[in-house]
Length: 157
Image 1 (spheres, helix red, strand yellow):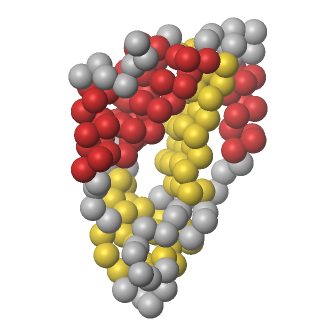
Image 2 (image 1 turned 90 degrees about the vertical axis):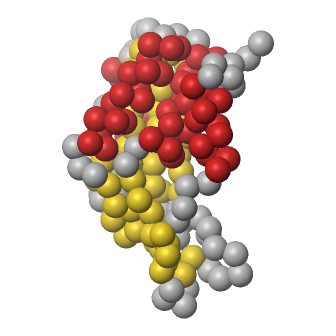
């Protein structure tokens, strides 16, 4: 299940729904929840505004999830990503993965969140406590992490 929306969501409800969809087959369910944090140095963050490219964004998230499902035998997944103006400490994203085995669920969940950060068409604008606004640049470390997955790295020996 993939949802991109300005609405807040219940992590517990989303995980319960995934658990229900995979009951009897899943031996593991791994989740990641991301929150608005203070990106700026020396000044407090007030909020984060997220824009996306509707349709294209959901299609790219689906592609990422399908890649993970094929690579790690994922039974099902949930990705919920919020857009719009989100105040500090609000939840932004949930990635949850169900698999027969914990190792595959962990790796697939990590892969999905890493790929979301670099491949999904989201743009982030941070507003500081003094009202100053700026677009958040993609970190080189995120790009490198995605490239490691692409090259087959990040896998246990």
